[in-house]
Length: 205
Figure 1 (tube, helix red, strand yellow):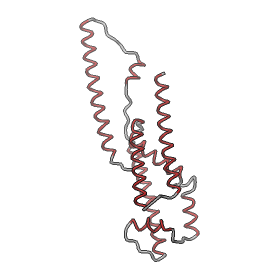
Figure 2: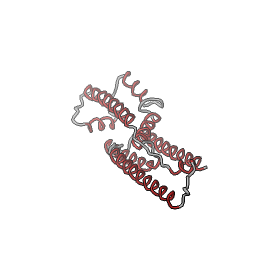
Figure 3: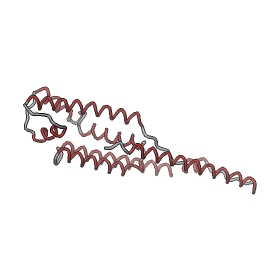
Figure 4: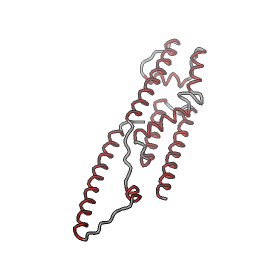
């Protein structure tokens, strides 16, 4: 998923804050005029003020940087492992694409320790397993948007685009674990949207 949206999000939030300030200043002027003209001023209730105040969402840059650093370190570790396997079996490494082509063929062997580690990594509770991977993707999406539920569909589309790019890099249909992760990410986006809708309904009541 691309992080290019960070700048756009920041700009959008900055514009929103400016508009909010302008509206507030206008309201203050109207209130002052009302006092002068009639001596009667409409005071909105606390509930109305709360309902009319739009929450401002801010990106969680600390979490974004943490997730990126962790992911980059894990990917580097994984590539290093594959490169050792390739070199050990007489395969040349020219570009990053060679790694994916090598893995896609499945025409290689690994030692018992490497196999055990790989199985642990992609297990249900492993770092590259469906649950942890889908959690990281959605956490990253929330950090990018500052948790703004209005951005869910945009983030969902960005993830889908990234998944298609991954298929192109892989050179075909991705493994079953990737498909399961795709479904899990969509389910978590749906859960986030439902949770947000429920929270809005409760606030209105």
